[in-house]
Length: 154
Image (cartoon, rainbow, N blue to C red; front, side, top):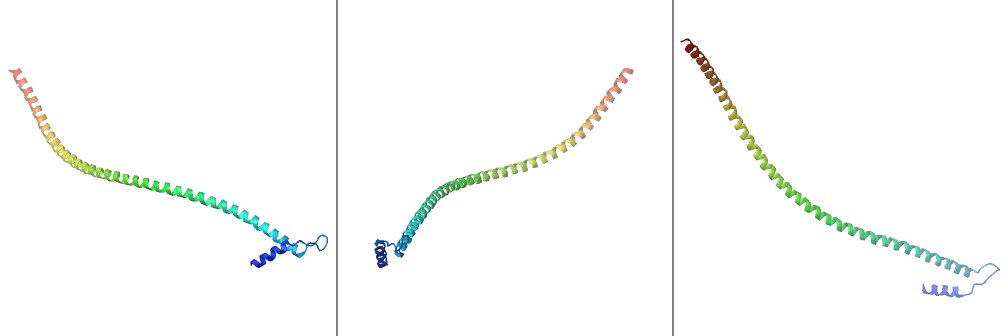
């Protein structure tokens, strides 16, 4: 490989001989092709390096952004877990309160039913006594009327 490069450089150092007025020797053509190829490879290499640099920069930016998003996501997860724990505690407290209130309502409903039953019985007794008293008052009014008539007669 080294020998062929040395031979190629030696050939490149030789002056190109013009065979005819506008023709270039075969060695000159080879040198020209190699020079053109070298320029093309260098240009493609520079373009590839530019593309690689842009892609590398994009990758680094994306990595930074993702790291930032991951950090924010983890912080948000912790915040949400704390909120969930707080809401679960509130739920437990409110569930206990609902149970207490349900027991209190059941007791109050039982007391209301008992009081309603007592009130109905007392009302029934009152209606019976009132009827008896109205009848007694009515009888006394008639008796007073009779007595007044009898006293007026004589």
